Image (cartoon, rainbow, N blue to C red):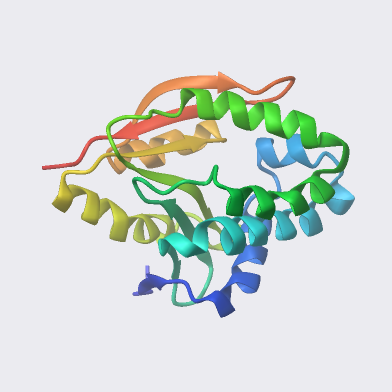
Length: 199
């Protein structure tokens, strides 16, 4: 893999990166669950990920991309809340994007949140995506590195939910362990993974 430095995302990058995530997650089981129509899915995912990054996660300062903007990692640091009024207001446009799937999406989110560990404090990987043509070249590993190295230094655990079973091996190579799985209401399975700091 060519050297492709990872840095924190600027607000001006978010539109480009929402397209990266939309293309990365187009065939994802959860994306298909939320947006069944292939005709409108790409546009809906683009809006979905833009709202996620711009309105919910950017303020926490832990969204990373590589230099050629072929991948992005979205993290939530320990103690950061997305159930506050500001996040609730930002979620209103989501109902327009999800249309008739809004209730199903809320139930799915609640089911996942119920399984999300409350303790100890940890970094949460909300989203990791690399453009399909660039996958398998090490970009995902590079995008994980800044926070995983920080977690190891600070003895901080991390957590994620994988929507593809084939990705479990990738995360296991980075120290994550499978801790359970959740079947979404009338939908696909999501795998839960936890990583203790590597010392």
